[in-house]
Length: 193
Image (cartoon, rainbow, N blue to C red):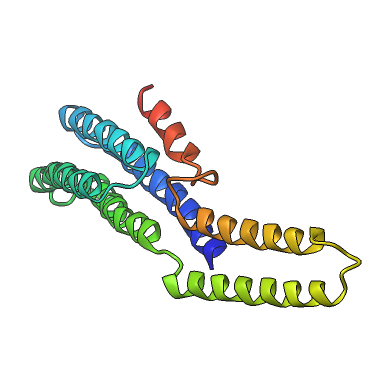
């Protein structure tokens, strides 16, 4: 469960970076003044996305970043509407609107992936299985005292490590295993060119 959710978060980063990158490319087909404004807004949008997912999650900060993202999306949408009003038959504007819509949708995909966690009942179940395993190991160890406490300690340690890894995979922005942000960081560098 944790691994599939972790993979979904990685895929969401790549999909969002691709959507923003394509939006930036198609923005070049807009009239020059609009294209420059749109690319500037996209650079700010990318920086916001990087900052948001770089740090440990904070509900207040997340809400603020989502509001700012929505405001940037609205500003981009206003540019799309203005370009459409200026030339309603423009294929380039239609392509820009299409990919801008996809970029906006990708925000929700990425947020949903980041919010999707292993249910707490799974961790309770893992803890229960660990306790039962250790209890039986201790019981069997007491019957065969030749072995000593080392095998029981190893079983306890391995069980604790497995539960810790599952928990770490479940939190995409904190811990030792984090969601790789390289795709969107590469995009940031390409937008600055």
